[in-house]
Length: 231
Ligand SMILES: C[S@@+](CC[C@H](N)C(=O)[O-])C[C@H]1O[C@@H](n2cnc3c(N)ncnc32)[C@H](O)[C@@H]1O
Image (tube, rainbow, N blue to C red; front, top):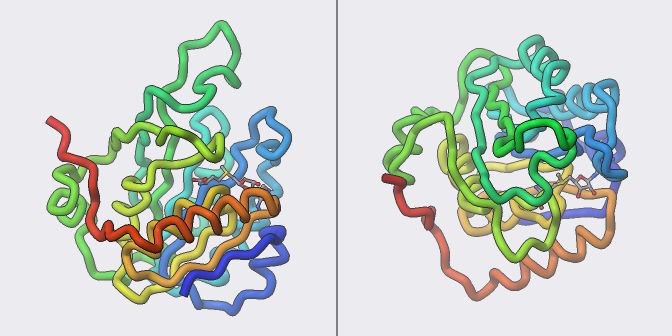
């Protein structure tokens, strides 16, 4: 079951049951200067608290964020979850990379991905490093994946990276949540990997794009990670 809606995340999450989600993979606004991306920490803590409420004990949590704005979010995650890794998603070709930090700075080529668990121990029962190594040839916390081209959303994330997180941190038939779907990358990965998915985006244009992408995958058989192992 794949279910996506046009809705504000707080309204969407407010309608969800406690302890109903096995895995969260999300990519919220990063608090940059772009209009849809400009959100303060207090707002982030509000939706994060709701996400924690709907997660099952032992559910895993992955959250993309901007390294320069991550301090408060990292503190919240350390206080509310067990932080397992601060992953680096390294990309040399991210749309507008580095521009938002200003002209007199080095160009940024990475985003952070917080990997955490609600409670002390992940309930999916997998060793993520081994699983990642076996399925992708790499189990490291620096993950090198180019941003896809052509882009349908400026903040679009690589499908193979999201698939890696799903494979390593959930089992088939589990339910995955993303309250900021954008172009629907997490939903598409769930469809390929036989996971249930629930999610929303406040922007109906992005939800339409996500639905179109989901429909386009109907004929594609792509069950495994298609990123070749790196040298
Ligand atoms: C970083 S993008 C997600 C991109 C996505 N990972 C992809 O691969 O396409 C964040 C999304 O959050 C959405 N958003 C911003 N504020 C929101 C809110 N209050 N509730 C739900 N979605 C929101 C934006 O419309 C945007 O599409």
